[in-house]
Structures are given as structure tokens and as C-alpha cells.
Image 1: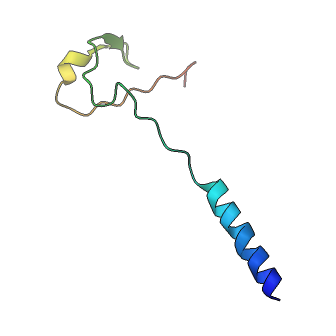
Image 2: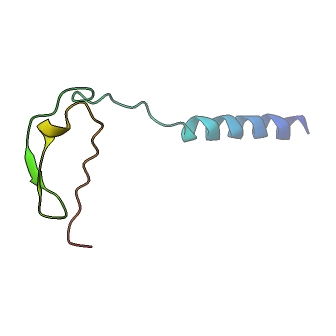
Amino acid sequence: MKIYTSLFIFFVAILVTACQAPPQKKSPLLNKEAPGFTLLDSTEKERNLFDLKGKNVLLVFYRGSW
């Protein structure tokens, strides 16, 4: 019984170690100011990034149409 307990603990330790996420690399552009650009929104209106300065912005790029 003692050997089964030891093997169980050994395999659980291996499983826990294998399932840990690798360390994340920090992006060199994180928390940096984005360059200014202008894009068209879904209503064909021009949107300038400079006009949104100081606000949170989420850019979503998708292929195709809705």
C-alpha cells in the first residue's frame, strides 16, 4: 500500500508540474502610446485614434462582413 501511495504522489506531482502555464513574455509595446492612424468604422465614418486619446480603445479586426 505504501508503494501505491508513493507512486500516486509522484504522478500527481508530475501532472501538476506539466500543467503549469509557461511564463509569459512581456510585450515590448505594452503600455506604450500607439501611433496615430485613421480607419473606417462599420458605418463608413472615419475614426481617428487621436480623437480617442485618454479613452480606452479596443480594436477588433475581422475578415469578411457580418
